Image 1 (spheres, rainbow, N blue to C red):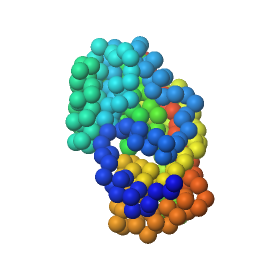
Image 2 (spheres, rainbow, N blue to C red; image 1 turned 45 degrees about the vertical axis):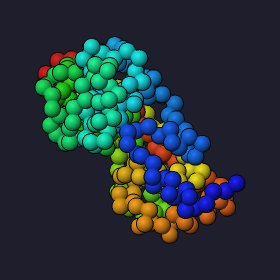
Image 3 (cartoon, one colour; image 1 turned 30 degrees about the horizontal axis):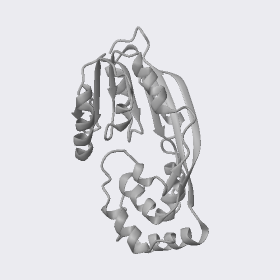
Length: 257
């Protein structure tokens, strides 16, 4: 039985969007996963590291999924609700969560970590990553690529200019890494199908991933939400495509910061 628009809206507005756990969307939205399995592959990198940094850890959920953490493991996060959540989750595992504004400089000494990781960073400060990596150390990251879920973005904001659609392209990441003196050893892109099965899932997603539609609120976009609700009810899930890329880059063994 179809659920009422107002009921779905009220539910999605009331639920907490703290942390980086999307389990509330189970059964309401789906997204294909990249073939490389970031969390699993990152855990393998962690098992061989001695000092690791997770930048923009969110609520710490991905880092906490790693079975074997390095002896020294540190995470940074900027959003206060996530800092509290990540601290609660990671402190029992010996991980220090550092409040950081996600702007240079990183609050760590040169050549500190042999592994730096980040899943879906908002911004990648390549020079800082190169600085805190030990010679021979590795940066390993899954990132949101160009024009990700833009079918949904453009539904609310209208057609975006080419320069916006190209922003966050994987080749820009390669150029940034190389300009910072790192050697890119792996770079892979994938486009992944996303389905939103009800308007509550759309609202929750846009409340949580706040940079997709930066001025999003339900009152501001109520008419568009109502129309999209009717469309989903008539035609089935709203389909979009997320873009992801995996990048791995190494600091040359002889390069000291």
